[in-house]
Length: 282
Image (cartoon, rainbow, N blue to C red; front, side):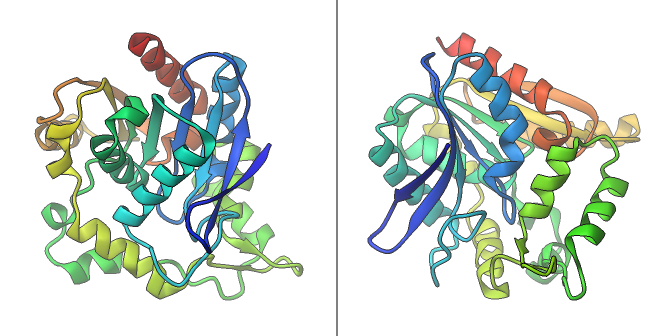
């Protein structure tokens, strides 16, 4: 079910909604340049267990409006608050991936009445100033790809090559993060300036200052890359544990041999862990 939710006088967000009667509801928040559709297989499992699921397209992403401004973490948080008020959501389990994890951290810290538990899916601890030598180095690594000449067929084939264990639905969702034109060509949904605005917010506003204000069960879902030798895996693990140490009610779940897009690569495991988090919360 598609929902259109007004968050300001001139901006509406799109939600992919699955109804349910079990408590709590789940609010799923994607990362930068992604979309709600990439959560579909996770959402299906959560809904099959009876839970209502609301997967949001943040502004400029998926089927949501793309205004000229508001591409930053504080605005994303404000949009989620307005959405919850419109939808009547309270005490949700919020799960955020990548930048969506950063957004979810601040959303939870500032709005404790709206959240019963928090899941951070290989994100929520993004602190690029600690990982990159400079802003320019960060931008060079995260600048969006040029799509001149790209088509649905060519990008689908490319994604199947680099993500051999993703389902066809996940491949289709990855392609749909881009704008698909009638002739089958693709373009980025956001302008370069809008994309850079989000990157600037990630750089300037790391989530760590918000951790002490979070007082709900928090699940840290950490991707350990395929082929990572023990020293690298330990560095990744230690960095995340040290960064998130102020989270008082955090537990870790590691996914060996995995990718950053855990919810696309291993949706059933992610959903099972989210359901267990909901049970522990209840």
